[in-house]
Structure formats: structure tokens, C-alpha cells
Picture (cartoon, rainbow, N blue to C red):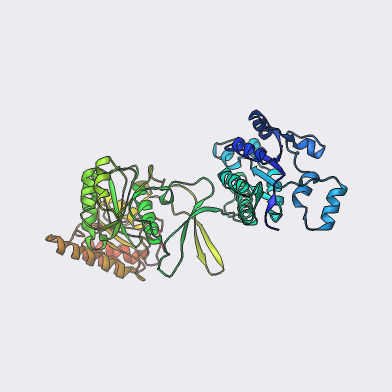
Length: 529
């Protein structure tokens, strides 16, 4: 059986958008409308004849509307297999009429939670009858059409008009699949609220996670891989997934990954001075704060101009024409900013392949939440690394305390190191990175690479010496031996910030004292893999 004639429809919706148009379309095809409460009232006010569900069941709505559709004459009419003689006989015996179409959208549970309602109201907005009807109708999609989204009303109306009041099996299959996804999302939202908000569990026995509305990407990390971007079904912090793309080519998997890394880092400075972050392969290759965005961009670019080619630029202030002109002097894949003025937009428009993303407010770097990583056979789940360290949390462990400038550079370097892949070493001076060593298997090599990059940048710029001279250096984890620290001394660093906690801390501190370095312990590690 393919096409099914719609003779009776049951409508019960919390979202009334498009309801009267749908009601009139059904009436035009001679469909009997059965409804409840506010839905029936809205249909009647539109001039439509409606049969109350209580008339269908022979029972009144009761218990403040909690019980109205949970009845055999509803679910029997939905679940009866019309090609099964036993089902047909049972329906006839109990005077159960067929229901061919169900139009339901559920109580606004997520919206009720989002506006901060009291627990009692939240519980009352857990729909029971609605999901039951949705599941019954979707299970029996061979004969019953289920619609849960007002956005699908036009397609339903078009199908009815084309087939003389019938729906095709292909449409019913698609709508049934969407219906089960809707109830799964709804249940997961409720389970999440109970686990995290109501019961204050950190890692519940079941972790409900619902992702929606995929954007299919051209390919994944590599061309032979397939990929898509999903968004969270419920409330979430604004980020790259919610940014408005003003121009440029479609974002790739790697663009999203790199852009997210850039946005997370620049958000660390969202309440501070103008800041610029340049990222390549999810690692920062230049970061700076300054009096203006233009100065911050130029300073960040000076750290590693070679790696910045084809990189991602993120800033914490709206872009002006001067900023856009500077950024577009080299090939840049993606630019991320809270906003941009009209002059900046015109300049970016000349670079048709450049992707410009406007985020509005930057995300809060101290927000809670989780990060997830797949492993073979499971998922690793952890709380976000949202720890931030201020001056009061630092411990001076060297004989010499840092100067005010060294302290500022240490804190800046530490903030950047948090976002560099381990093992991470970051040199900073005057509010800018001057050398970054990322992702090495030992800390000594990261320190050496950062120093080498600083010397290379000095050579290309024609500076008399690398900017690591007189810099502060940050290490994302403790120095297990003094050799990494000595590489920083060789690069010209005069202050160091690190977690501490090695069994050889005394040896490392002694090496710092011998070299005249100021050393600070944070007591916090920032591994990133």
C-alpha cells in the first residue's frame, strides 16, 4: 500500500504557526478535524468545524489536561494495522475509528527551562500525550502520516493537493523518521535537565547528547573523508558554529577546526585591550595585544610571518578599514571578529575567497561545559579547561621576583600557552608572542624550536637581535629537567612561568637562580592534545 487517503486528522500543537492554513487545506479535502484545548479553539476561531477529542473518546479531558489523548480510541486508531484482519475486527468490535493524520508539536520544555521557570512549571511542560501519539503514528507510518514540524505543513499540503487528499509512502517514511528524531531530542533534553540542573550530576549514568541541523561539508580533514557540522539541540554558548559568514567560500572541516581554536584564544582577551590571534593548524603562530587592532595585528604577524600565510585571524574588536587593509595584504583563509564596519566589508569583498565570520559577542572563556573525544569503542569526556590564573595565584619560587613588566609578560605568555598543543613553550615580550614551540614530544625541543623561530623572524625583519632577548617564557607543564629551562635562558628569557610539581623542581629552580631568572609557579597545568 502506498498512497493513503486522509479522512480524519488529529491536531494538538503548542506552536500554532501555520495551523489555520493547514486546517483550511485539510477541510478543503473533506478531512474531519479532531483536536484538543487551545488547538481546537484556534481552529474554530478560523471558522473551521472541529470535533473535540473528548467526543471521540467518550471521556472528558481531566487532571488539568494531563489526560486527554491517552485512550484506546486514540491509540487504537493510530496503531491498528489496516491489512491485519484481527486488528480490523478488534477496531470494529470496540468502535475504534481510523486516524490517518496526526499533527503534533510538543510542550515547549526547552524554552521553559531557558527562561528560568520554577521547577513546578518545568515539570508541567513535560509532554506525555504528545510524544505517545507521535510514536504511535510514526510506528504505523505504513498507514498514518505524522507531522511534528510546522515547516513541513507546505509539503504536506502540496502532497494532498497533488494526490487528491492522499499522502505517498515516501513522505510518510520521511516524516516518521523526523518524528522519532523529535521525540528522541525531546526526551534527551528532559533527561539532561534532570541529570545536570535538577540532580546536579557531573557525569550521569547516561549522557544524553543531541546534535541537529547538519551542514554537510565538502570533505573532512582529508579529501577522502566525509564530514558535517552539527549544532547543539539545546541552548549553547555562541561560537564558530553560530557565526554569520558574510562572504567567501564554503568553510571546510579544517577551517572550522582552526577558526574554533582562534576564537577560543582571542576570547581570553574579550574584556581587555585590542587583541589579535593568528592560527595555523589549530596552533597560534602569533598573538598580541596593543592600543589598536591594527597595532595588535602587525605585532602578532611579526612573531611568525611564514606560518601566518594562509592562516586564520581572529580579533576581539569590530574591524575597521585600516584593519581590513592590513589583513588582506597576505593570503588569509578566515577572518573572525565581533563585527566590521561598512568600509572594512568593502575591502574584504575584494578578496572573494576570504571567509569573513562575524560572531557578535565573544564566548566567555570561563564558561562551563564539556569537551568530548572519540576513542575506539567509547568517548572521553572532560570538563572544559576554563581555569584562569591571576597574579594573586602565582608563587614566586626564585630568589628574584619578576618586575612588573615581566609579570605582565608571564601572564600573557601563560594565557597563550594554554591554547598551544603540548608540549608548549611560548616566549612573550611587551604584550606579544615572540616565539612559539608547539606539539613536540619533549619540552626541550619545543623550547629550541620557539627560540629558532624567533631568530628566523628577526633575520627576516632585519632586527639586530631576536625579540626573545628580555622575554618571559611560559611552559604548559612543568620542566622535568633543567635542560628546557636552559634553552630558554639561551634564547634570552629573563622570567619563566610554569606549573611546577616536578620531582626535580629544586634542580630547575636552582638553574633559574644561577641564570638570574625570576620563576613563577601557577600550580595549574594546561596540557592540550
